[in-house]
Length: 263
Ligand SMILES: Nc1ncnc2c1ncn2[C@@H]1O[C@H](COP(=O)(O)OP(=O)(O)OP(=O)(O)O)[C@@H](O)[C@H]1O
Image (cartoon, rainbow, N blue to C red; front, side, top):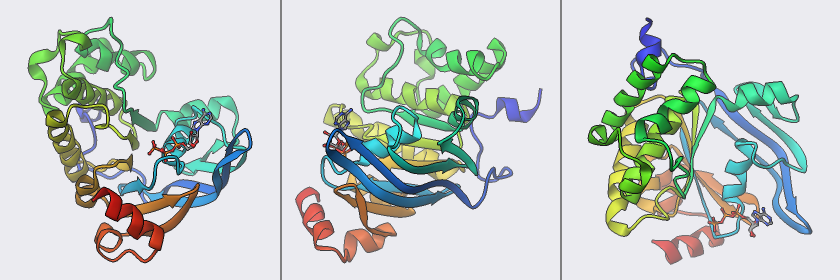
């Protein structure tokens, strides 16, 4: 069996996957009724980069992740992932492109009736066609990475929220996505469980070549992992730059107001 099948994710020293631009949104507009949530939005993310979306509640950050997951469709504009259209595109192409994208949600969304191991192996077996053994081997490696080796046979209800979220991270990585979307993954956790989850994500950011697009209110985490921070306001990017610039010398008044409220 190739090492490729065994590796839970691509570590940095191994051959990188795509390089250059991985995600591109062009003139993307999303409306809910009369409410324009994203307004002719343009931005791109290069492969292997960690990009964090910050901004006030309701500014459209989660909507972007949901568009990339194809849980929503834009009203206008194009979305491209790894050079292939995600929207507009034929259904078969959308399914293929979707395999390149993993997401971790605020509410862990684990299957309650499946064990931890099965939660992680289910999609690699049914969607990627991995053998049960190969999927389990990969799952065990991922569970070690997220510090949950002792919990393989438990059900989600037997775990803390932080542990469930770490299973959800392992589950997303089991599909070997090129992009990991993180939507306020610690917002539903008790405060004492937040650090454990963020540490796992820091480790993934440091040791793998995965591209991350992250919505978070954890500004220290954003500062630690981000190559670029995008400040959103009313469905537009109003300021973008490396974290040291955005957090220390923001140019826009709205960014300053937002950061003074949350830091
Ligand atoms: N399915 C929906 N139907 C109607 N309105 C929606 C829907 N989803 C989101 N919205 C609205 O779109 C706007 C943007 O929501 P979104 O969740 O993208 O914001 P956000 O920046 O992620 O906010 P938060 O930080 O509070 O999660 C909000 O006003 C929200 O109420």
